[in-house]
Length: 343
Image (cartoon, rainbow, N blue to C red; front, side):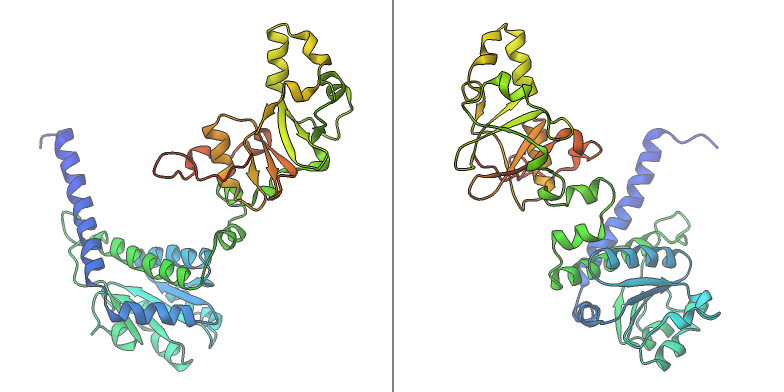
């Protein structure tokens, strides 16, 4: 048998993607009342949404449980085989069960159904057939429908698991919106890594004012830099007026340029004469994601954080933000970050 060409392999891959994509679009077009009933049951659940499924459907179930939990709906996964050996004890009467099976006849899953019913726990079925054993036991059936798997034999879970995942995601995210799930809620559940950092408020990542370098506009550059540092060195001095408002910024780069151009005499002139007026800033209470976008787009290393009156409360230093994925910052249609700025 001849080795298939690259073009043939690409075409086979496209066929799989098209089959799965078309199945998702068909599911979107066929959504009806049962979807709404399932969403409302999920929203009204006062305990945990217990997701269960076997094999590939079980793997999809684990992902959906994680999605529910991370978007405001308490959830955990229950392995149906382990349930019959003691894990049924994890079910509480205020829980809700979301059971996943394309056939609706998976033996390990159907054997736990009487025990769910005995506890009067509502059951949502994500299955291909409403008349299956699972479908008949459910309070609501969100049907995936009859699907043709995308593999050459038409048997390997592929299209069916893709549709299960998409339908489950749609339920979870609609419920999240109904619950009024916010950026701050999401940040509280994702404190680790670059995603968690991006969702913080700027005040949670900035260096507070007492740890920053500040100066009055009439102080000389030499006087400012001769003062002992408050704590660890920052790359900028914030120039503050008598009324407490930020009037400018002077960075290490500004100082280096004075030396490069042999403007040594400027060291004994007021810093207000060589500062950058009306600098870019971040507003207190804004998201760190927005501030990171501003740092990236303007190629800045420091960003003062001010309140509505223009008074500085701290400074974002790029050194403190190393590890945050700047490329993942959302942009508006013009390609610019949606950062709030103030003079």
